[in-house]
Image (tube, rainbow, N blue to C red):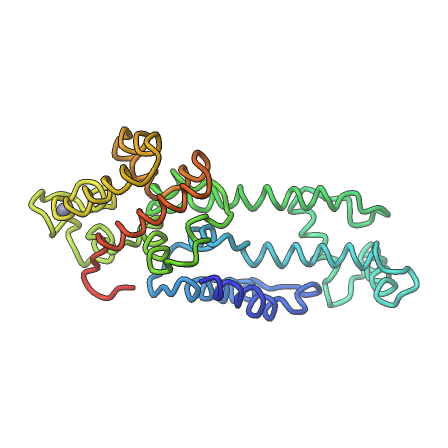
Length: 305
Ligand SMILES: [Zn+2]
């Protein structure tokens, strides 16, 4: 998986962004870039299903490609205007383009308008013509904040991500994907987190099920909470999971986990709480136990992944 991410960043992303600093993109160009990035993310996790885009990029920690392009464009504009010698040809060309724009006589290549619109989107309406670049740090700060705000806003629009939004509140790479020794378990954890665990509730969305669990006699809706914490069919696996956590993890970690209600347990299993409270080593231990449990209870009806 790490190799896949390296290939994306070093080859695919750098190839599709080659020359992007001076592009003026159309909506269809941006849609194409987004599609390429989405398919690359699917390939890295070897997915055939179609998880929601914000969750897919969010767990991998990839910046949305449109935001990356705009950041590169502003960085290059700053370079042309402030870092290059005033006697250099690129600086002179930029100065000419800005002059033309300010006179309402912009060339067919709308480079300055594009830069201006990117800055205006971030509330930096007046900085294009300034002789200093003190605004650049502000721009970068706004972009960082925007990435997080957009991510939270994007996932809130998907009903399927209701549970996901309870344990994911940032757009940066998840710790469970930083483990390189259990790719299959990492992949299952991604599917569980993003509501793609091949449950009857998933099949019902596709019109292939009434949504009720077919593995036990409870005759109830099969969602992730049912599969992981309630279904009688997986009683043995669940008890073994709890027992392993009790035996191998610190007692206060197990205590925190076991005393939680169903929602809290699910958040504990799929979220990052162990990392922030008990540190990397115990997170890795708990994470590996969770992945092993997920492998045991993952029973797709057919090859949907
Ligand atoms: Zn069941």
